[in-house]
Length: 251
Image (cartoon, rainbow, N blue to C red; front, side):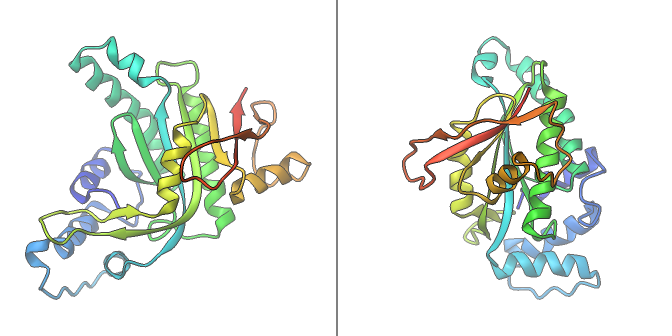
């Protein structure tokens, strides 16, 4: 779950984000998660607020699709810019990416400089594995198509698996942090991801969805004139059981 105060700021700037989790509801959730009030019992008339609070406090394990979006070769671009230029550059990047994420039903999990972690799944978005993958795929495609041949040209790692949210209650920390092997593998996949591509492991459901499409069963709105799936490539990453990864490449 994103830092809640930061999430409010995002929702004020980009009003299309998750209409269920409004600024007002997010503020109520902050009150429920406030460590200084942890012993208090909260009663919410709003069922949607209760749903979010119950979900995070129960530490339920769920399956979700995760995207790691980041600018290709950002470190090299960073070196040639002043501090003010970096701020302006990233602000313009966020202005391009965040509305697309909101449009496709994703929620911003975390921002790490040019890296943006997006989640498609409970409690923000309900759906079957296929539906979550389809929404994440359409989001990733639109981002890469919009940023192609600009200073913000990017790459995206896509991974699916089990996650849960954990809160450190020993300090005033207004955040439930996503943890799980799916997130660990997402970070590792990002490290080998290629430009203008949606990168994914061959052991994931997304690979089999794309493989079936490649054989002629078109389950998505993939424009074959814009996108193609590359061949499997071996990956040698410590702690990763997946032996190969591949990409949907923007032509």
